[in-house]
Length: 129
Image 1 (cartoon, rainbow, N blue to C red):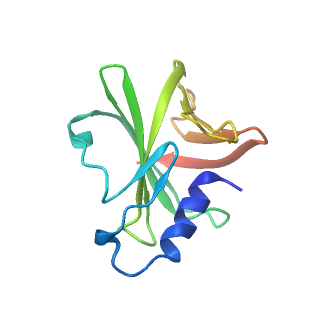
Image 2 (cartoon, rainbow, N blue to C red; image 1 turned 45 degrees about the horizontal axis):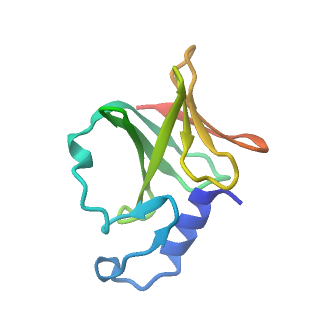
């Protein structure tokens, strides 16, 4: 099961007021808990996934210095946002830190789409927005 789907499921089954709750996964800080100034990071790109086999989401990869993050917003529940810390492993490839399934993001250099991969292969493609 993909980590983002698990995170989305946590929010679906959590109490209605998420402002008083902080849920943590080992490599993720979920809003509204993270208080970092991520909005000051420079955006590398934004993508949107609207398929049916994964929660509809937007993805934004940002950089500040040598630190990379991906902010994932679940479109069906705007209050559900996760911040994934990334390690750049090549020009257009970013490993999700501490992922148990080897997840990584790849920006397709031919069409600009964001591909999400793990140990089982490609699992979703998000279009550039």
